[in-house]
Length: 134
Image (tube, rainbow, N blue to C red; front, side, top):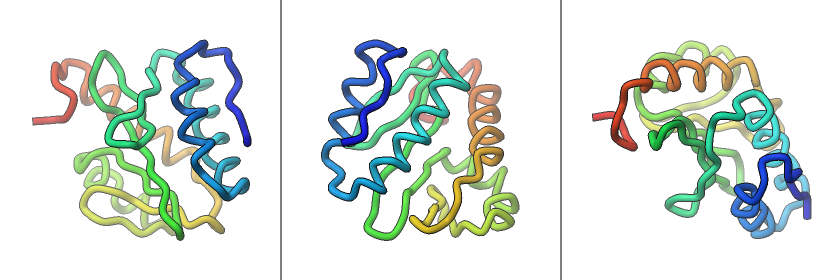
């Protein structure tokens, strides 16, 4: 199994458990790369498992989440993130619905797009006192 480094302490144990449930080692590696990138770029975000999905929060509010499917990684920046970045999602070659966008296993990860979405949610939800937007 691909394990995340411990520079974020015991918080990563939860993600390591999630990763160990993924049978395909290539898929484990993709998730590990994404999680490691987010943690190194945004050390203030807290990794969390909720609804059986890895996600990151800031001051108790949801910032971005991920889930696995047979054909793709589903990325959830909330509906406002999808709406705000719909054109960028399409330009990156990803498909999206109202709540998620999909990165197929054979597609590259557009870290620039992830960065824009995370920055948007951190800024837009700076005063948010709830987990989800209202």
